[in-house]
Each structure stands twice: as structure tokens, then as C-alpha cells.
Image: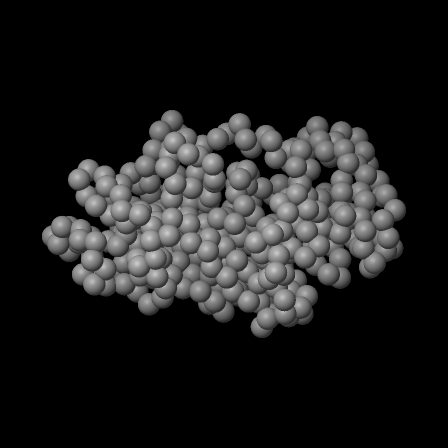
Length: 348
């Protein structure tokens, strides 16, 4: 049977994000480690040309993965939780989680879509880590897709990675006694977690209610983006398993390949800074980039609230009057010829 995990979200950590910027570096185009819950800063459905992350429950079906005993079950979107590949008593890492276990059974359609990423040259790669929580009889599959034209589902025409899911019906697995022998099951096409459960670095044998199963650990993946040089792309992580269990993602990064393992999480793009943060009446921008820039402020729902004129190259401070903006969470976005970067702003 499915190993139901009851965990607590760390709500107090969300407020800590107010004093931090989204982690980028000059050679890092995208970085999301999920150490702070990003859910409130994400859009709930795509609009075609969004500059924010999108967390979209396309299927709309309720799930049965208990992650918070006080608040009940998630409705189906990706949600923040600790890394389930480690012991609950060692909550030292967090991840984004999606559930495909429902009653009645359904085909999951949970989309996690990045902002647009401009791939400047052939040295950039996409990397991420993932785990399928429970296998081999409930292994979750997923797909990683790329779009050059927008972030609607039909725009994602390139599939760059496919993870296999278990297709043996649960009733058949039950009748077999849930053996750990992978050859006893059928799987969809694609890469099966932990090299078909042969690489013990990425799974362990666990037990719940007397049933042995393979508990997944985070496994790294990487894909070169050389086919997208000179293009702005969206990347989608689509959890599309049928009646399996839990999938987790972590450490999504687009960076020059040599920096994937070494990029500092505190580095900032182009020296782009906003001060103060939180801010009340006035905000000062500063950057270091030899190209004209445009600065925009968006609300948490993606509405444009303020825009600068086109500004010359250099690093001279530029000020914005915030007196007409209501209190809340905003995104300050720096548009450049080299790409788009953003920082989170709290208006008080």
C-alpha cells in the first residue's frame, strides 16, 4: 500500500524571504533551490508570455497525499515540503512535491513552468534533481519540455527528458505481494529512477505497514541547451503519472556548465540591487551592465504597476516612487539584451 507521510510545512520561513533576493549570478540564468517556499510568488495558470514561475494544476483532481495534518490534503498543485529522500528527523533540505495518487484514479497533469530564459551561448546547461518516492510498484514518471514560443501547453513541443512510470495496475502489484524485483513490473518508456533501481546512491529499501519498497533519493540530471543558443525558452516540468504516488524536484538551475556545482547561492545578477527592502515610499535600483535596461515592477499576480524609461548603460542609481502602490509583495524585473532577472520586493 502507499506509504502516507504526514509532515509539517515551515510557515515561519516564508517571511524570511522578504529580506532576500532571488539567487542568480552573471553566469547563472535561473536558480531555484526551494529552501524557502516559492508558492506565493508563482502564478496559478499560464498566460502565454509570463515572466514568473507558473504552478498549474491542469487536471484539477483532488489527491490523497497527506502533507499537513492540520490543513489536510493538497488540492493538486506542486507544494513545498521537506526532502522525502532523507529521514524526517533530518529536515535539512526542502523540495517541491507533486502527488498522482487519487481516488478515483486519474492521470496527473501538474505543470511547473519557469520564467523565460535567454540562452546566450552553447556553454549553458539545465540541471535539476528528482526522486520518485515509492517504487518499483508506484514509481512516478514525469517529462521535461522546452518551448521557444510561449508557456501554454501546446507551445512545449520539445521533450528533452522522460522519466518512466510504473504501468502495472496496483491490483496486480498487490496480488504479486509487491516484490522488489523490477522485472516483475511494466513501465512506460523513459529513464527509470536510479538506473532501473541499480544505483543504490539514489534509493534505499524502506518499509511501511509490513510492505518493503524502494524509497527514492534525489538523483541529479543535466541537459545541454546548445540547441537553443540565441533563443528565449521556457522549461516545463510536467508530472503526468497515472495513479502512482509522489514525485519531488529540487535544485533547478540554468548556468554555464562549469558553474553548475559551484555557483554561490548569494551571487546577484549584473550587480542588480534594490534598496531598501522592505520599502515604503521610495526604492533605489542599481546595476552594472554595459547595455540599456528597462525596469518594471509587477504585482504578485503579474500586473504591471510601474515602469522606468529606457535607461542608459552603467550603474548610476535610479529611484522609483512607491507612494501609490499598496502594501504587498512585488517583483522588480530588470530587462536587458542579455536576458531578464528579477528580485522580490516587500512594500510596507
